[in-house]
Amino acid sequence: MKCDCIAVLEDTENSITSMDTCTHLAVWQRDWSTGKGWHAAASVPFSLAGCETLPQTRDRLRGLAQLLPEQAAIAGASISGLAYNELSRMGFCLCELDAFSPDILDALACEILASAQGEVQVPTAPTPTDIPGVYTINLMEVQAAHPDIKKWVHFFGPVNGKTKVDS
Image (cartoon, rainbow, N blue to C red; front, top):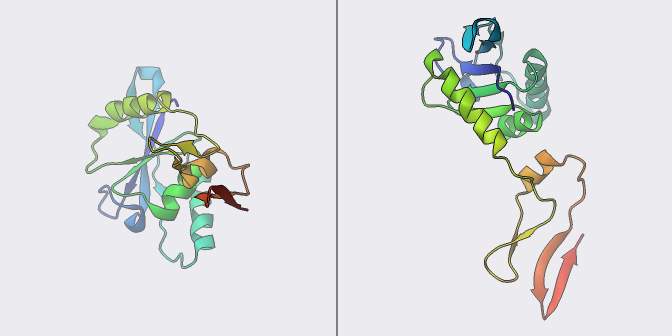
């Protein structure tokens, strides 16, 4: 993932904040014409205030996605729950930071690139653990990586020597 845009969740005091208290995103874009420097672009107004239902929150997050460049990274003090799931599914790289300064943009972009290069394929089936007969799967990861997978089969392991399957 080439990281040319980092949007930072900010509050009314222009301090890094969580998704819940965000009033706008400060948008930083890499300026390739002058080297590897960054410049502040126009901020993007955004708030989840007034979203009382899950569909309202999803719609607001999808609206935010339309305002940011493709493959932008979003940084904030806390990005979790529905916001994390939806923004991650839309392809945004999400970063949590304790503090923000424009001085860290190059380092953050390098970390995002290194993380993207180290990504492994998400399996579409349970994977065995070190314990014989015990398997694991991260459903959220699988659904984010493979949105075409709709139906799941539940494996309950051996019952009286037979494998029980519930679909």
